Length: 198
Image (cartoon, rainbow, N blue to C red; front, side):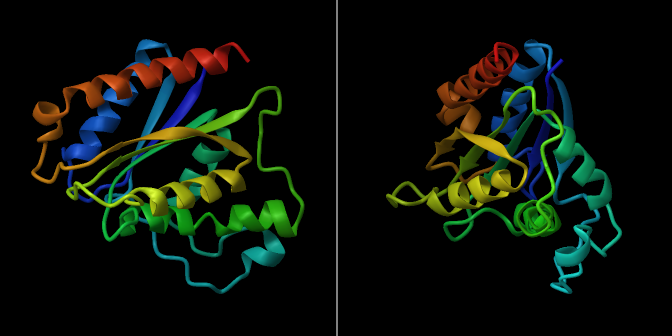
């Protein structure tokens, strides 16, 4: 069974990025994946304090909900993150979780430890973004780059993104862009089926 971790990066529950991820998760579950949900704004996750102890130990010295989240990320076959775009980047809540994965980066690149538990198949990642802005050629680029480097620490392959512009009011994506909601659902199914065929 494929195990997926879904990170809800928005501080607004039930907003546009949440709805996009809800649909994606429905697709995952339709394809019989096991899914754990992480709501970044509700998790007890402190910012990285840059003490750099992880560079020698590979472990984060801050004891909070990240201890459980590290385990989920390490064990996941698929990691998906949803976030609204704030100033051309993902939310502070999502970025805080990602920044705390510096310890995993240290394990991989400084201590040369394996950060992929299942070497029999690839580990994948996917990104869902929403934005109030309608323009901006590089609107999603910041979030995409951050996601790619986060996934790299876990030895995961970036499998793409869905970005939806012009949605600001809570939940309006469902009426304005139902095709994006459907696309997220279908992508969830597609990724599970793709992983099962590796």
